[in-house]
Amino acid sequence: MNPIEVNILMSYYKIINHFHLFCGLGGGALGFNRGHARIGNAEAKFQCIGGIDVDPGAIADFQRLTGTPGTVLDMFSHDQYTAFHGHEPPSDWKEATPADIQAAAGNQRPNIIFLSAPCKGFSGLLSQTRSTTPKYQALNQLTVRGMWLALEAWADDPPELLIFENVPRIASRGRELMNKITSMLQRYGYHVAETTHDCGEIGHLAQSRKRFLLVARHAEKVPPFLYEPIKRPLRAVGDVLGQMPLPGDELAGPMHRVPRLQWKTWVRLAFVEAGSDWRSLNKLEVEDGYLSDYLIVPEYRSGYMGVNQWHEPMGTVAGRSTPTNGAFSIADPRFIQSSKWKDGQAYGVRRWDGPTGAITGQQSPGQGAFAVADPRRKGPTYGKYAITPWDKSTGTVISGSTTGQGAFGVADPRPGLSRSKGDHYLTAGHYGVVPWQSSCGAVSASAGHDNGNWSVADPRLPEPNDKLVAVIRSLDGTWHRPFTTFELAALQGLVDPCEHLELEGLSDSAWRERIGNAVPAPAAEAIASVMGTTLLLAWSGETFALGSTPIWVRNVAASLSVQQSTHICH
View: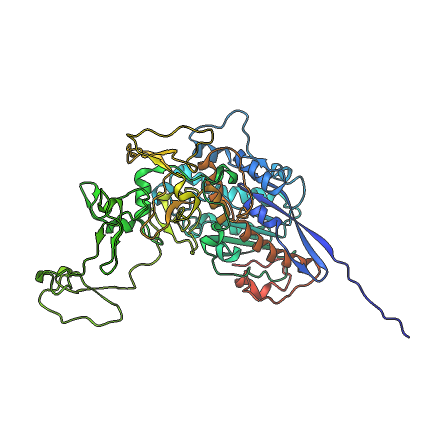
């Protein structure tokens, strides 16, 4: 019998070092650490070798999330510092040098450099006038200086790939700077391509986050094609938030507390339709500063405002049989409309798919059915006080993610507690409310709002500007509330909804700014994976490979499979 020969291929790891300038709290680095790529028996292992940012709080978060030391470093030039801050730097301040960049990377050479420079000066949230001031021009010029520092730090042995991420508007508002960056990269031997992507689609997130991406590939070191990451549909907000405890749960930590809003803001949120924004408020009738069609009341039970059916019996007639304390109203079918109401068609609304009545000389909405339910009524919402449906994705999470700045409220379908007859909590005084003018029972050792009459009907309603946490059941039966900081981090992909997260400091505004500035980790993971595949191909000697997604650097596709040291792509 002939022996059977068996070849066993042992897998081995190829380390891919990645380094991050303007790293923030480390969302991009966290995602790159999770990257995965495999070619044959070679498997990529991504290793973060450092990050740089000017914010000490962000660097503390970077170290916590990535497990890699970060460096607090101001990369402004002297003139940029003066223009941005409006004064000279302190005596111990000095300009960053390429040697400082090398030191921040532990004096190791990165294979991939990821830059996500400050984007405030390019963002559409900043007016064109303010973006041209010396302060924001200095901030914008950090893009060029940061790129130069990174390229010069390893000029003798350039990184294989370089990624520059920013807001889409940089392609127009920062066109002059982007042209400088492209020319600089070409002089250092890189092919360059500009593109845009949606972090939500490549990271499979529950938010749509459009971003600009410049990809630079060193012509000599990386001949294979670089393909785009796979795109997937956006997830629903509820898919993420539904896995988390309810806001305010102490076990979830301080980042999951409900923001304290002004009372008038809570009222506004309650009347905004899910999926809409502040424009829903235009539908309300307001007289002398008060709603004329609605009244905000506490939760009531036991038939409050109850209406009996005409053909059914009612309950016991009590000593105070009014609509507000029981089912003491009736749906009377013997109602005859006035002849002035045009046969009941006043303010009639026709269906979009049905015919209308005869066109008469009087065609106002109040005189007949002269209105139509037009399904083409509105596109996406971008306004203030927008409410995101529970089963839909949200808009981009930004640094100023508050209810008054965009779609940063959610229609949460988990609003309250429902009890019924026979339930232990029904008669034991649980959640009992004592009238303001009455005395209460004996205070017990375990007195709490949920085990007896230990709450009070306080007539001192909040003033419009008083800040508090309120639960108002909206017209759609849900709780319209702002996202918690922890929920924003989960929507950004920085933490699993079932995990715990604590960032540096105790300031919600600082947390939200760093979260909003972060690169979504799942999107960075997808980018890292396709780049890892390209690097493994290059290191194995392969110069061509087919992919199922479009080629990222499409305008130089013909030259990607051939090493041409002198070729410059336009």
